[in-house]
Every structure is written in structure tokens, then in C-alpha cells.
Length: 385
View 1: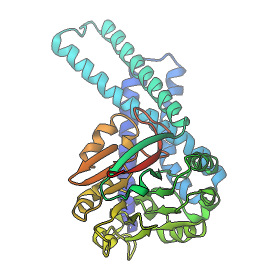
View 2 (view 1 turned 135 degrees about the vertical axis):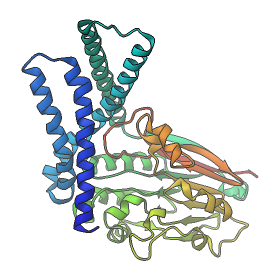
View 3 (view 1 turned 30 degrees about the vertical axis):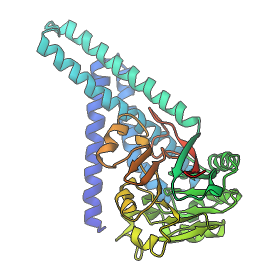
View 4 (view 1 turned 45 degrees about the vertical axis):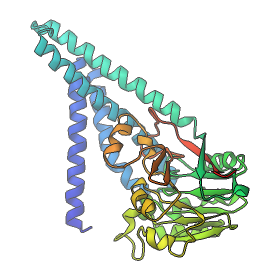
């Protein structure tokens, strides 16, 4: 991106951020008519947090971790609360509009001001409660989700084969070594035959996060640990991360497949967004399955559920994906359906099963509203068992 385009992009982002904060200020702080000096304090705090957002994105890339982590925590938490302040402010405007249309809204300026203060209080309370609920759910960490998938081509002796899926862990400014160590411990407790990581493992460079991710070397699985890239790997130095993961005993699958003890084939593809970002990278399902024996079951790792059409056409029996976080926070679980064919759970397209994990971590605000992060225990079952 050229300097002029970057400047235009940053100008647009900063303008949008200012307008959102101004809208929230009008609907909450100004409408609440807080007595001074509290109104002034609230206004200064609101726009100081607004200024902190672009500062955070700068510190994430350039500042030492001891500075980037607290700045990121404060900013991402605020972004979560800001989002719900914005959403509930819109709801408040709809309520006001309905009041005017139905004649319920009082005409007397004093009474109308009282109603405005009540709506502002409701907006602030609803946003606070929703944000705190989201923080509490995210703080619980991932829960084990158990899924059984019947595969017609799986031999009876392989029935009960366990794959542990991790995805969208997003080790970075707010999730680090301790979180990932707990994930590794809980994954090992499942005694899996195989562990797969379906992308978006980290948010940052090898230089900044290698010591946080190194705990992956403690993963234990009889048939190994496999990895495919997500879109975030391409923001963080994909080739460097792929090389580092190999030193931890994690095997990347890049548009290729491997035989798993003669029981089934495991294929993996690069993220679909990678083409054009890094030379030689990009999703290629036909290449990944080329040479596969069609009499054997085929499991495909693909970060984005959008790969399902190519997977179905290639004769894949089961595709494992992530990317969507199940929407992470309401209402994105509904809006995500506009961008991805599947948001969460087990689905079927033709003869192909698709499982989309809700994600093991989170991205951005450390919140989960209406969704739960997961470590997925996938049990393959032979139809002939």
C-alpha cells in the first residue's frame, strides 16, 4: 500500500471512529445531562478512548510487549463496550421514533428531557451488562465440544478415531503463553489420535510471539499435529511462522495430503485469501487431493467454510474449518451468515460433512456474547462398525 493510500485509509478510519464516538456521546452523555463536572469528565474519557484506538494499532506492531499488552487490553475492552453502546443507541433512536409516530412521546420539553435521560440510562446499563457478560464468558476459556461424524469409507477398525481441533486461537496482545498452555493441557487430556489447527493461530510476528507459541511442542497425539494457514497468518509473516511451527513438531499441510496409517487421507489447503498476498500461497483443493485413492475416506482442513463447494466437488468426506468464531458476539452471529455459508456446527453438502468450530480464542474485544469458544473433540465413526 502506497503512503498516499495508507493516509487516505487512516483518514477514513479515524473519521468513522470519531463519528461513532460522537453519536454515542450525543445519545448517552449529552442526553443524560450529567451534572458538572461529571459530564465534562465523561466527555474527556470518551474521546480519550477514541484517540487510544489508532494508538493501539500502532503499538501492536512497534512497541515492546510490556507496553502493547496493557494498551491493547484497555482499547479492545473499550471497543467491545463501544459496540454495544452504539447498538443500544440505535435501538434507543428506534424507540424514540416509535414514540413520536404513536404520539406517546411527551411534547413538554421538560418531560421529554426526562424520557431522554431514562433512555440514555437504559442504553448505558444495557451496554455495561452485555459487555460484562461477554467478558465473563470469554474469561471462562474454551469448553470441550464433542462431535461424532459417520464416514461411509472409514474402515471399521478406525471407528472411534479422535481428532482434536483447535482454530482461531489468536495468540497476540491479549492472549499469551498461559492461555495456550491451558489449551494444550486440555487438548492432551482428550487423548486424541490427531490434533489439527485450522488457522489464525497468532496475531503478530515470530519475533514477538515465538516464546508464547512454543508451548505447542507439548501437544501429544499418536498421529501428530497438523496445521493449515488462516488469513491472519498472512498479516504476520506466514513463511516465518510455517518454518517455526515445524521446529515445534507441527506439520503444515499446504495444498497436499498425507496418508494416516492406511485408515484415511488427511488434506490441507492454504487460506483462500492468501493468493496474491504471498507468492506461491493460495487455496488449491484439486492440488491438495490429487492422487488420493477415492476408496479411502478423505478429511480436509480449510480455514474458511467457503471452501466447501470445492471440497464437495473433490469428493471430500469431512471438512474442518473455523474463521467465523460463530460470530463471537451478537449480532455478528446473524450477520456472519451474509459472508459465510456456514457459521458454526456440523452441516452436510451432498456427501460431504462440514464442521465449523466456534474458535478456541477470540479476536479483538475479549468478549463472547451468545457464543462459546471451544476445543473440538471430533470422533470419526465407521458406517460399517
